[in-house]
Structure formats: structure tokens, C-alpha cells
Image 1: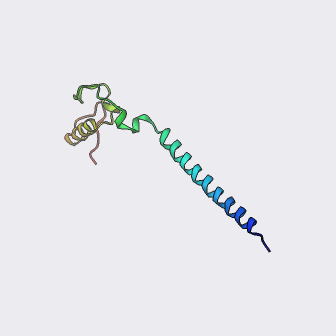
Image 2: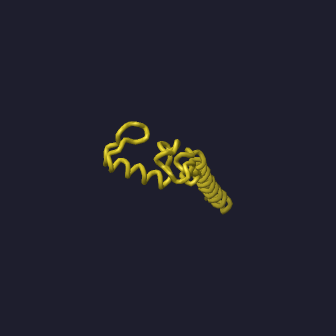
Image 3: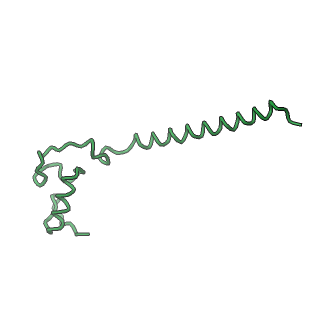
Length: 90
């Protein structure tokens, strides 16, 4: 017959396993969020063209909302993109 101490030890063991698994999931999630590319985070970008997108040297790689809007407008007008290749409207 199992003793009361054995049940408590078993509970503590499973509780510790669950706690460590949760800690591992949190560590993996924070690592995944920490190693994202800076280009995927538009909040870290700053406008270097003073709000004039079409003449900006960083326009092709820019992810700021104003640049994305200008890219959509250029592709809708059928104008070539700054990279020299015409964009096909979606």
C-alpha cells in the first residue's frame, strides 16, 4: 500500500515537470521574439527621406506605412518601381 509521502512526492514531481515545461515554453517564445529581423519591425525604422518617398534612397527596402502606401499607388498607376522593374497590380 502506498504511503501518503509517496503520493505527495509524486504530486510534487508532476507539478515540477509542468512548471519546468511552462518555463521552457516561455523561454522559447521570448527567444523567438528576440531574434526577429529588424526589417520586420517597422517601429524601429525612421524616415530618412523627410516624408518624400519617391526620391528616397531607402524606398525599396522601407516598410513604413507611408512608403508602403506610395508603393501601392505606384503599382496601381503602372509606374515602374524604384528598382526599375514594373510591378504587377494584385
